[in-house]
Image (cartoon, rainbow, N blue to C red; front, side, top):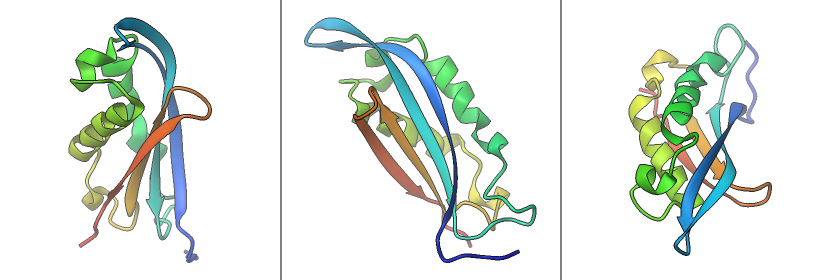
Length: 129
């Protein structure tokens, strides 16, 4: 398999509708969360990882964030940063470890936004032994 110096990326964007309290009033929004897997080289079949590796993220967002009051979910002010931090903690605990794809993702990146121009993000390294 040919390798490149530039990292390879795959990602999926998951839209969800939710409400949060801003200035004491409910504020409904269309949100989105994007999760990206990054790898320095492609695996044997020629990809970073199977897109199915991101299915648990979709399922979690549908069950825990979609049509919910985000104040209750993130345990504080439901800013994009707080929602991103919440998803980071979930990904850290529930996404498959690097051992599942030892030549695959070197990091997992996430972004959460409430408009086309406003977003917050994080990056989680996936060290390979």
